[in-house]
Amino acid sequence: MKLTYLLGIGAIALSVAACTTNPITGRSSLQLANNSEILTMSSQEYKTTLSKSKVIAGTAEAKRVTSVGSRIKGAAEKYYQSIGRSADLANYNWEFNLIQSNELNAWCMPGGKVAVYTGILPVTKSDNGLAVVLGHEVSHALAGHGNERISQAMVAQYGGAILGGTISNAQWANVFQKVYPIGSQVALLKYGRNQESEADEMGLYLMSMAGYDPREAIPFWNRMEGASSGNRQPEFLSTHPNPETRISDIQKDLPKALEYYKAAGGKI
Image (cartoon, rainbow, N blue to C red; front, top):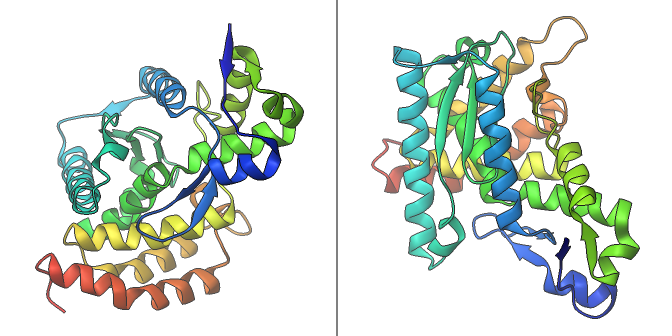
């Protein structure tokens, strides 16, 4: 069986046809892959991860993860509805789970499959800090960063075959596993720095729309930097821009974020 991708005529037509624009940040990206296939594989991998992890349920911390995540999810859905793009989230099946692990880590797979590790909670400190993390991770899914990374890998590895019209299921699965190395060895999903920067910006806006104070983002990221041990950086920060660039970008985005926060009832 073949997975067929209608890509237009030639590389230029392909790029134009597959270009997707983020409605919150305005950034455009190449997204060639079939989203329904991505969501199916994400759901399968998420279930596998949970089955091999110690999932914390019913505790105050687990309830906080669900509560904060649900508010950010609701804010995203409300925003997408307001711009007539509810269909973008129609196939999302949101889940927020807390996993027992000392790693300073969290991630969100396509379709809204979220995991937060207990190791990052002492750094988040509050609901606002947790909202920074969840806003950032949810943004990866909403912005289609998984599709973008898969598309980049597909073009790099199977460029000729893609332009020819098909790649096999085995090739597709191989690309997916490289982008999302979850399974038995849970790892941070590997995004590029442009995607991480976009998730910082979009996450800042989403947490603000949900009524969380975006001014808490800077103290959180400073704490994350401080949590590094010696020269070893936490996985959560491994592909992010350098600290100075991140803080500068957040400061630039704060005025707009505060507008969203004020509209959500926040006190300036």
